[in-house]
Amino acid sequence: MENSGVLQNMGRQALVVTGRGGSSRRNGSLEDICTALDKCHIKWELFDKVEPNPSVTTVMEGAQQAQISKADFIVGVGGGSPLDAAKAIAILAKNEITVDQLFAGHFEKVLPVVAVPTTAGTGSEVTPYSILTYSKIQNKKSIRSPYIIPAVAFLDPEYTFNIPMDTTVDTAIDAFSHAYEGFLSVNSNPISDLMALEALRLIGPELLLMARQVQPDQGNRQVLLYASLLAGMVISHTGTSVPHAMGYSFTYFKDVPHGRANGLIIPAFSRFILDKCPNSKMNLAWQAAGFTSLKDMADLLWSLTGTPAELTPEDERVFVNIASQAKNLANSPAIPDKADLAQILAITMNRQI
Ligand code: NAP
Ligand code: ZN
Image 1 (cartoon, helix red, strand yellow):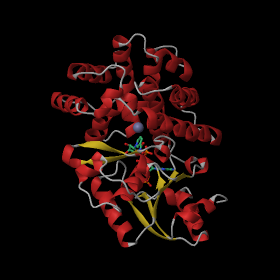
Image 2: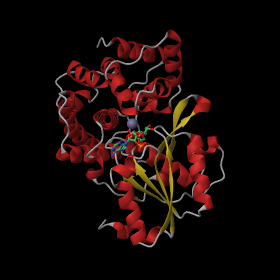
Image 3: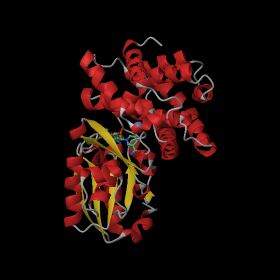
Image 4: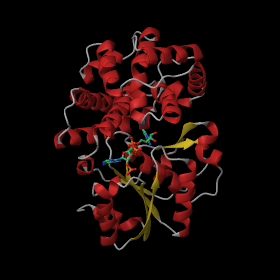
């Protein structure tokens, strides 16, 4: 609350975007941000219809409300889903564009975004991405634009203190995958590597505790929120790669939460990189996170993710096809072709690393 003054110059009318499940009401984040807006004499309306993995339809509805209320800025409160929805609403409120133009980044003016994360995973509060579910292509698709990097982010670990264990695991694995994929990315640089190694160093021991069923305390929650912020800064430079590209199908078709989907695939992705690029920096990533080998990391991640739902041969064909079209495959130190992706999927399902 003592930082509410930074909202002062953002405008006179805000649209507050949050999740439909009511978690931001329960964890105090919604009340805090609304009180801060009131304190600054900023009028606001609420759009509280964002579902996990938000759809294009939902953000269009939110944009319409932003236009009608003449919002000067958008405040996203919640996990990655409401934050990503807030970013897309900020674009659509200012631009009469088609969905294809939205995903192609054909816009310049957007409303400023304020981000209040309540999960410790996506790092969306610092990234230039908004990831939406687009049923027309049966997949999730990213908007990438420097204009949607939030102008202001308020990070308060208190909002994350009561996240249920399954969401804590999902989101921690997401942050881990951002640091890991970003560290290995062909776009990594010495600064992104520093942040990635620090995030891995912080998240590795937290994952180990979760695997031992230890409930994170407030100190652990603070570490996770900070590490997810660092990992978000990493992917802002590097992008994600194969685990995200393939994970989206597990989410779209099998309802596997985003971070958990990445965790399923990271071991097989790592085996692929190890075979194709023996000189990759992978050992450094394992060392930083506290793992001794690929098997060590795979055992931990797979114990946290649980077993994935069965895939039919048709599912496998679709998953491979969709992943093979993902732009972020190009960020990987070795680019998998369809046969490689099929092999990565087979290892993921058989767990034979
Ligand atoms: P989420 O989809 O935002 O939320 C998952 C669930 O957790 C929802 O039911 C939500 O409830 C609940 N929740 C949120 N905060 C909570 C809290 N403090 N206490 C209790 N429950 C809470 O999950 P997420 O993993 O943070 O975000 C995933 C999305 O972000 C995916 O769409 C993914 O693709 C995207 N993503 C974006 C980026 C980026 O850079 N933009 C990076 C990675 C991932 P409510 O219904 O109340 O909200
Ligand atoms: Zn992610």
